[in-house]
Each structure stands twice: as C-alpha cells, then as structure tokens.
Amino acid sequence: MGRHTFRYWLQQLHLWIGLILLLPLVMMGVTGAVLVYGHDIEHLLGQGEPPARTLGEWRTPGELIEAARAASNDPTRIPIAVRWPTDLGEPAAVRLSRPGMAGERPQFRGGNQQGGQAQGRVPTQSPFAGSLQILIDPVSLQVLETQQAMTGWLRFFHDLHGHLFIAGGLGRELVGWLGVALLVLGCSGLYLWWPRPGQWKSAFTVRRTAKGVRLNRELHGAVGIWSLVLFMLVNFTGVYLAFPQQISSAVNAVWPGRDMRAAMFQARVEPMRGVQPMGVNEAVELARSKVPEARFLNAFLSIRPDQATRVSLIRADHAEGAPVITVIIDPFRKSVVDVFDPQTMSTGERIIAWQRALHYGIGLGGGYKFLVFVSGVIIPVFAVTGFLMWWLKRRNRRAGERAKAAIQAAAAARAAD
Image (cartoon, rainbow, N blue to C red):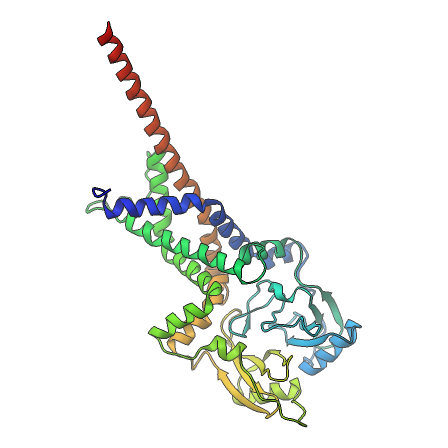
C-alpha cells in the first residue's frame, strides 16, 4: 500500500464512487434534464396553462383573491398567495389551502421562488400537495382552470429528482449528498485528466483511430473538461438547494451579507390587539412606495398572526427567472420590515439569490437553459464511458491472466515430458 501514489488512490476513489452510485447519478442527470424543459413539454402536449384573452387593465390582487374564493366553493380554504401574470396573455393565479396545510413556502405551479421570490417555471413543492391553484383571467376575473397540486409525469420526475420519493428532509439530504458526490467526481476527474507536457492538445479531443479502452478514456476526458465549469456550477447549486443554511453560511463567511433565507421565510411580527391587519392591496401599495419604478408580481400572505407578508416586485427590464425585489411587511403596524433588492444586494447576497435560477436554467436566456439541459445529459455519458473503461480493463486483465496461466501450464507440461 505504501508504494501506491496519491494519483492511484484518487483514481480508486473516482472509480468506486462512480460505480457504486452509477444508477442514482444517472437518474439525477436524466430527471434534471427533463425538468429543465418540463413545462415546455407540457405546452407541446397541450397540458400548459390556459391563455387569458381579455384585453384591458389587470385587476387588483384583492379582486383576484375574492374571485378565487368564490370559485372554490369551499369556505374552509384560505388564500396563501396571489400572482399577477409575468406577461400578456398569461393567467393570474391564486393559491388556496386549508388551515394547517399551508406552510412556509407556497409556490405557484409554473413558478419558482428563490428566497421568497417567484421566478421561472419549476414544479410546485410537495408540502402543498393538498392546496388548490386557481387560474384567473386578470382582466375579466373569469376562472380559467382549477388545479390540484402537480400530478402526472412531471410530478413523478420532480419528486424523484428532488427527494427520491422520501418524505421530509431525509430525501432532500440524500439528493444533496449525491450532488456532493458529483462535485467530488468533478474535482478528482480534473486532477486525473491533467495532461503531461506536450499532450495538452490531444487531451481536449477524441482521436478517430481510438478504440476500446482508449476511446472511452478520451471521450470521458474530453466531454468532462469541456463541460467542467457548467457541470460544477449546476451541481453546486443543487447542493445549495439541499443544504441552503450551510451553503449560505459558507458564502457569507467569505462575502458578508444578510441571511436572506431566514429574513424572508422566518420573518415574524407581533400581533396588536384590536388592530385589523392590512389587506393585500394595501400591502402591495406600501411595497411599491419603496420601489416606485417596479410593478407587482406576487404576494405571499400572512397565514398566522405572527407571520409577515411578503410582496414581490419586478422592474420593466426584469428577465424571467432572475431574482426579484422582495418587500417584507408588518401587516399590523403597516410598515416595511425589510427590502431585498437585487440592485443593492451585496456580493454574497447576490450569489445566494441566483442559486435556484442557475440550477433550473432560468433567468439567463435560452442558451444557458440548453447548457443546463446538457449538464444533465452528459452524466449518462460519463457513467457509460467510465463503466466501459473499468469493464474492458477488467476483461483484458483476466484474459491476460488466463493466457499467462495457459503458457505456464504448457511450459510445465513440456518440462514434465
């Protein structure tokens, strides 16, 4: 053992992590790639959100909520979130839940939130499986569709990719550790790929004459080095989604900033006896008074007396999926508790705010979205080429041992004669 080098042991670590976790890692890559274009596929299959065709001025969030409550025919359901469309022709949405079912992080189907900020188009999280999303024409207030929590094939892929069908935090943590394994494979793979002097050019390509072990080795290395930065970025953001508190602390240790996640999701207010909390329209106007050039996007309502209201705003040049402005409001004192504006965030806060968008391939255009899709597709390529390298070497070694044993047996037979 003492004669083996660091490179040898790193190669063994790289090999056996890949072999032992081969199937789970391939599953993560394939499901992640599908989810990148999940809602696009839904639209192609005619399963997307119905269009809103009425022209005119959009109605207030309060009017949208009243229309949704009237359409639900269930007085026990309470509104937990309301969303304006992100563009013309899209429906508004109101999410309703029963008391005790509403949690800390409501999400709209077709919308994703980063730190309480709605953005992009990713699936609804499972804690809201019992809630309703009512899609409404923002002008006429006509109810277009009433949706249960995400179901069907997209829900299957989301739950498999997000928490392996394991309820609670355990599934998410296991997925996070799979992400850590991918980061280890990426770092060790870079060290093992590093070419010797004079071999740099060939290290980036696959030779046409390559066959067998050499073909798989060159393909494994070339695909790995060309995709390394993207591969590491997407997997790091995935680890953040599984362990947000730990990653945020690490980032803030280097680039000091506010703990946005705690400030947004755990913001608490003190109820005032005899004081009626402000309504959603008033909360939206208060938020807009802090950022007059921005328009309303969505609001996450107070579902407990001590919970703050969160209002999200966007500017005219906002790119879908990018971090949005979040205003935390005390509904009893009718005051703003905090404002999280991407334009004034510190470096660390901006890094954290972009994690979810970077992972899902949103907010940076169609080109980046396609690259995130590719980062999932290449994981099966790594798995197949890595497995074939190991299997071919093992087969060749055993064939050599059998040939050697045959030669020795023949030599022994001749010596006996």
